[in-house]
Image (cartoon, rainbow, N blue to C red; front, side, top):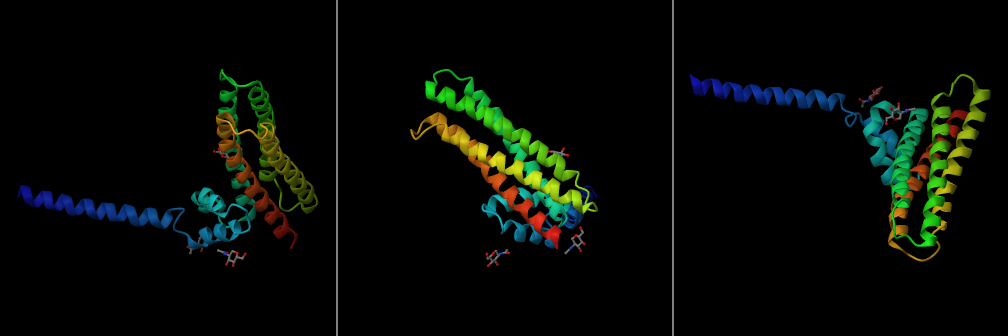
Length: 201
Ligand SMILES: *[C@@H]1O[C@H](CO)[C@@H](O)[C@H](O)[C@H]1NC(C)=O
Ligand SMILES: *[C@@H]1O[C@H](CO)[C@@H](O)[C@H](O)[C@H]1NC(C)=O
Ligand SMILES: *[C@@H]1O[C@H](CO)[C@@H](O)[C@H](O)[C@H]1NC(C)=O
């Protein structure tokens, strides 16, 4: 009797586990092939395809094959990475033992990446608030967003240029974070451009 109930509990657990697996795989963001294929095809237009797909695929169901949501999500991820890069670079700038060149370069980066964060915030706010029906406003908003996102990308380059050609541990540390932001920004910009072009048709 005791053993029987344990066996029953065992099978009941398996049935429950199966049900959970089935229901989560049908409602999971990963299950809808249409939405995932949309991200794959869109990311194919970006420079860093794998980063694009890997970062955006968890949001496939939110994006729901919509170019505006795709661009907004890509911008939002870029903003998050710029914010965390800024935090790291600020921490580096407070370290002791930096050379004079490194101090100057890291401080410049804090400023440049700080500007990027504001530009990405502005872009995200504008792009998120776009009113699809007002097409006269659309062109202007998208043009602003393109300008801000490009400026953010330029800041990343300017930040790295400040270190000069000498390779140092500090430079590598900063670069690691800035390169990641730059790649996400480049991808987001490509997806914004894609959104702009699909809207014209
Ligand atoms: C994916 O989801 C969309 C709506 O979000 C739906 O229209 C479409 O039929 C779904 N495709 C599949 C293969 O489930
Ligand atoms: C990506 O683009 C290339 C051409 O640039 C094309 O051959 C390939 O089929 C595309 N892949 C996807 C997944 O769209
Ligand atoms: C951006 O992402 C955060 C979570 O990381 C979310 O709270 C916020 O609503 C998102 N903003 C937009 C405009 O999608």
